[in-house]
Amino acid sequence: MNDSHILKVLIADDEPGMRTGIARSLENLVVTDDHGEDRYTLDINFAGDGLEAQQILDQNHFDLLLLDHGMPGVTGMEILADLQAKKSTTMVVMITAYASLEMAVRATKQGAFDFLAKPFTPRELKEVVEKAASHLIVERTARKLAREKHRVRFEFLSVLAHELKAPLGAVESYLRLLDEGITADDPEATARIIGRSLVRLEGMRKLIYDLLDLTRIESRQKERTLSDVDPALVMGLVVETFQPEADRRGISMEVQCADDTAMKGDHSELEIILNNLVSNAVKYNRDGGHVQIQLASDSETITISVSDTGIGMSKEEVDRLFGEFVRIKNDKTRLIEGSGLGLSIMKRLVHLNGGQISVKSQEDQGTTFTATLSRTGQSNNSASSGETP
Image (cartoon, rainbow, N blue to C red; front, side, top):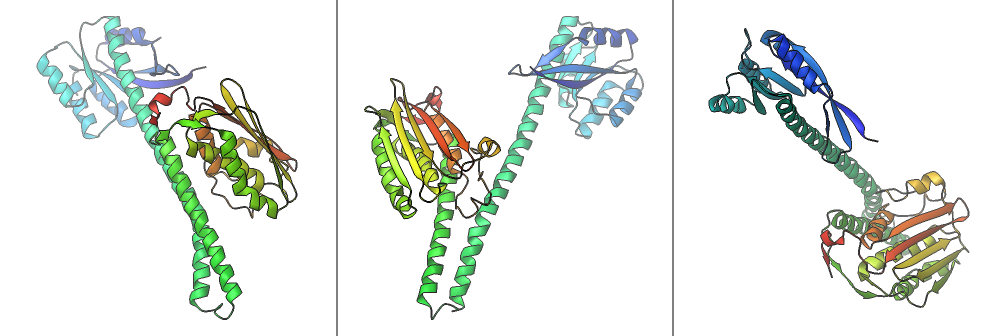
């Protein structure tokens, strides 16, 4: 269902018949945006002479002004000059019985969008108003997008500053302890401080790399190199990476692979996807838990499913899961490190590979992530994504 919006229109003309005729011609006019998603109707108002028009414009904002050039008292050109001086965003269509090139140039220089020569037909009126309204809609959309872009940038930087503040503060505190010589006679305490600092620095480095990856994907500047890859082989390397941590916590990992899992893909992208899936399954698992990894295939897709027996999530937490800087924070996760960007990046890479990802989870029971990738390694719109085949 299309959203409905209103454009406020002022008809300023000293001829009552002209005001009535214009209103009647425009009363049922509906203008849509370029995508046909939003509908704009007209709220029509009147001014009987230039002075009244000026007073109304001083008290109210109008999107569109249909302005008669030759009104007595305050003329249309004077009103136009006043609007220009006030840097008004009201769009003006000048109506005149004395149409000439000189008049059109003068009106345009003073800020008129278009002009309409009397007498004109209802069709000519509608065409001019539709053109002006469409221009208004484009400008309004551009302003809205600019405000949204500013808001998103502000929120992004605020969250980024928050994510970096804690580890920077921790490293600074550790360095001050070393600088003050408090642990000089305790090599074990010194080693612990250095180790904790390195962990914090590694977390910040990962956050920066994740941000760079996300920026490249979002801006479609990420260069892709598609070649023959086998997710089963990549998964074997990923499992080896997380096996020591799993062994330390008594978490068993089981991998089941179909016979044919070969596909076209970017090796680094596939590694990021699988790293995130296995990392989360281990990280958010309970000690002594289990991770089940399955790779299935058909003629067109590869399906990767990773299940754990960990802390699980509520439905509300699952709904927020793939947002940027989103981390599920509760008593069970407060000691688990993470940037909050891994799943957001993974989702984008899965889509880039022509796939989808889904999550099923139950609190205190575990979570299953299922990612389906196209064997071509490409989405339907990959032609414009900067890929290198």
